[in-house]
Length: 81
Image (cartoon, rainbow, N blue to C red; front, side, top):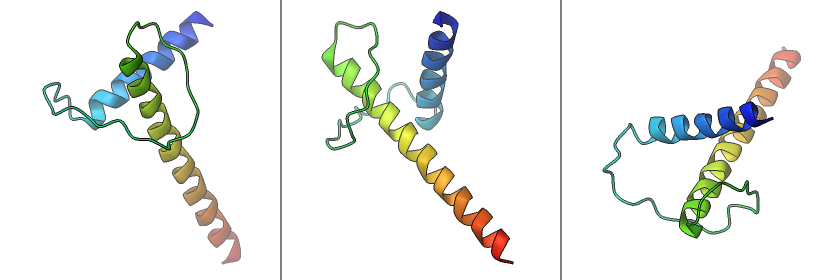
């Protein structure tokens, strides 16, 4: 279980660095409202860090959902042909 959690955290960090182009000095990313209530507790004393992490999860979840919906549409179209 701990290995899975560590892998999950590493994946999120890797994804965040990839999306930002590894530019660690980029401007501060805004915190958005209305991204859902999905949250996963991380070890931090910073409520802002927790919010950024949750926002990243929401972005990944939304991107994954869109890819799945797109794949379903493609398969349905394939089956129609």
